[in-house]
Image 1: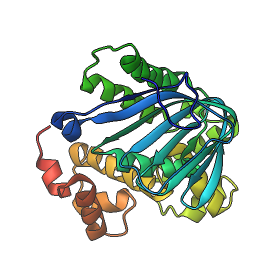
Image 2: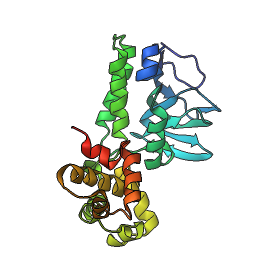
Image 3: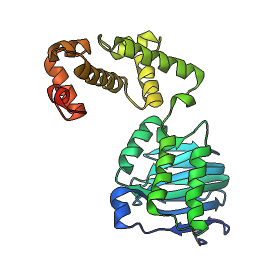
Image 4: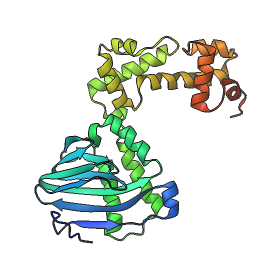
Length: 280
């Protein structure tokens, strides 16, 4: 359907959806979406809107206002915004976007994790085909009046969100080398003392820069990755080696048996002894 909003050109389309109770409980779900063409300097500002927004910049650029800062999103960038917070955007020249408002049980957690990796929620992917094609499929579902069920729509949104997490194939050569070397170093030395300083020194970077790079490229802080590696190794040893819990704790890099037991229970919901007795 057409929109009468001032500053949105007549060739634009907008569609609305009312999710079922099942979708609200289980899925990501669309509340509205559209394909918009904007007049130059069109500006929107809202203090609050009850959903999250994903906007693909098809043409032109936009100023994005979010959390008291201004960012610029250009062609092929994707904007991921929590609209419950004050926000806005302004067209710069001939702006064209595909966008959708959505929500779901885990949307807040997805947004927080992605915002940690992409400043201001401005996502610049090296390869945009998967994200763009799935956004297009969602739009086509409404524009062409397809009867696409809510579970399938949720699957499309999940695929879009998954693209926002960096993978090894998308690293630059230099960053890939740094991260791969660090991961190998951790996997070889998980039983030793591993501090942020040790990891940063190993690749000749400052602690601050290394920590940000590691989180952006892997989705984990260095500490989280080290802990996950140690817990994974501990699971293997618990099932394959006749070691005491204390011996296993020190071999996996924990400072004491109690530190190991507490960390293992926090990550798995059970003690090492309970995991050892568990039939898989």
